Image (tube, rainbow, N blue to C red; front, side, top):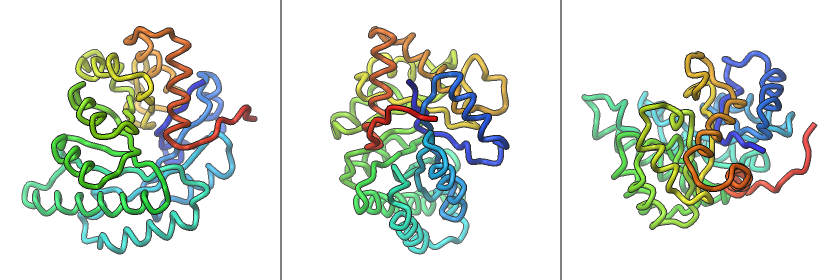
Length: 270
């Protein structure tokens, strides 16, 4: 069985959710986590998670949103109230990040500071409600590791892993509860550092995701829209890279997914 630990099937890109579920079935994907865009557009993900046993939901404030004259304290307070209201339907805080790729050249230090404030604010909510944290890092490896350590958060995953194996060692040295998500990028021919890391990280630390509708894996990379069913091809690449049996890899990664989100194993789904 397969768990797509990060997707956006509630986005407008997907007009027929029943068909998306059908595709999931065809490829053996049992569950998918729906990642919200922001507090104000969370209803779709929550409602799908309530309606279908295949879906779970996370909450987040997109860091780039707070660059446009939005008060961070107000947004954190809004997020806190939302989690309190919907706690039973929420499995993680997503997406806490440090992304220095999109920084405004005229406001680099200001935007870095806002990302830091948002990071620590969301970590406190995660601690308050006993939720794991999903972390995005891009062009910010050193600060990501620094602030993870300063925050004291232990249960987290590095989303859409694009670093090298040395980075994973630094993360695992800090926290034995850390995980690493591999997306369709691991299937790309030039992703040698990522593939090397996927081959060496302990199997108990690996999760798979699609980030649908983005990051479509091979052999469907030519398609404009990714879908949760294609998690199968991310998993197939992990199997190709590692030495354990294919069955062991699939079973362990599925178990890792349930463990990360503190989801009890469910025996069946309609």
